[in-house]
Image (tube, rainbow, N blue to C red; front, side, top):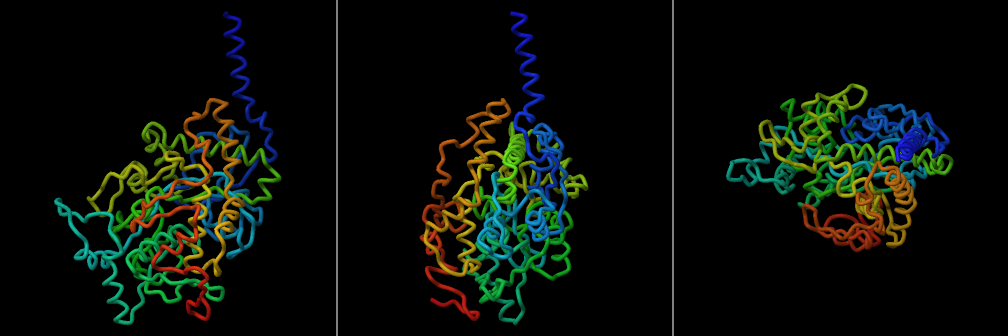
Length: 453
């Protein structure tokens, strides 16, 4: 019996030390890009907790100036992969902006964004916002509270400017969704006008995330939609107030993804699997045991090589709370979700929602059948790679089988968990597009600055 126990222990030790060698990664030294946002956390944790090394990978994490530079780096091969906006692989694959086939085997998180307005705009909004018994504003706050202010600016001939981080970002679509849900037109794109301001009542422009607070403070924009810690940074600096979170716009909305080129995944399949395994382990670590590791994650993220923001600011959202105004800190356990609710699974229905918004606002200039949306989603989102990596982790004892949606067809059930309660069903994208009050419908296009049928 002693000999058997010793032999078993030795075999387990051997399996642990040679697991990465058994996978036989084709490329073991990698450069991965990211933007300084808290939702890059799975990358930082995979590195700091040596999950990459456990898979035989030696990863350098490289901060990028903006989302375009990051995408260009992946396409050119200067970066092997990156923390990406969920819309980026989709837009690149269909040729909106830069044409390149990008895939994602891993969804990085759910939620994580908010819309912040300047102190002056907040003061103007306050009379339009119901108060609770405690005298504090009732959340979620709809854009109805902003509507008369936008109308006033327009009547005075002044543009109402707001910022978002990139044309195909969740921030752009969430800000547009919030505005449009209250009847405010955020504008259209067209093949010959990439500003997205055709017929706009609110003008949205691109601002890199770390620059959002200073741009707001300068008065260049009156509000913005961005990820953390740049909403809470405005609160800490006393220059702005977050009015609604992305969780309140769409409960458990998909946010960032990990992207590589299709060529990379084909040339280095084991390396792609190893990266996915390490990131799944990092996501599990971030969410396990009711967030027991979040305080440690905050400390890591606050380091200058990662997000580089004050730890107390990062902690506001990363530890289950969110501060709307100074002193108005509320419980929000799902503001940042990294593994729970199947956050890491790359659902086709998540991809299709982004495509519907691209079509809604004219980035996809013409209509397509439902099958087109589904085919694009399958080109880009790769649950086959994800589930293969997950099975390996389960077999190795690094994850539980019950943690993964093995039987899903890639489509989440229809949901009306939106701020306007409109139902989204990813299997019927055109019906969903037509159900939205503001936006392109059917075969409408934007030509010469006008919506035409």
